[in-house]
Image (cartoon, rainbow, N blue to C red; front, side):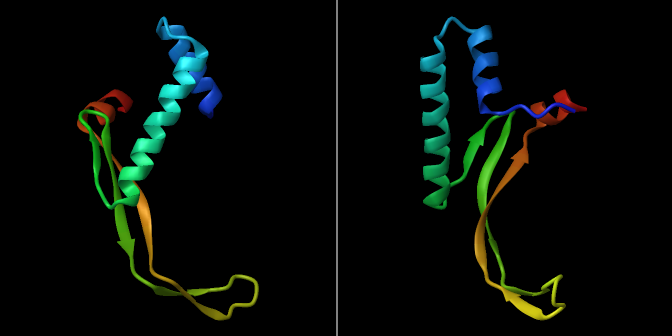
Length: 93
């Protein structure tokens, strides 16, 4: 299994379009900034067919420190979540 990083993704988009590498990097950066900004506001971002980005509240819970076996409290936090859309699920099947 191959791990595709940002640079490889940019290169793949450049190969499929007539856009320059600089333009593709700018569009990708802007897209990620907008998605991040909307999630910070608590909004949901839906890309029909691809999937939905949203935030979820995780309650505080008790955990165990694996080194000392001592009980610790893991604080409540907000975490991002991604749910794949139908088209993406079908393509990966």
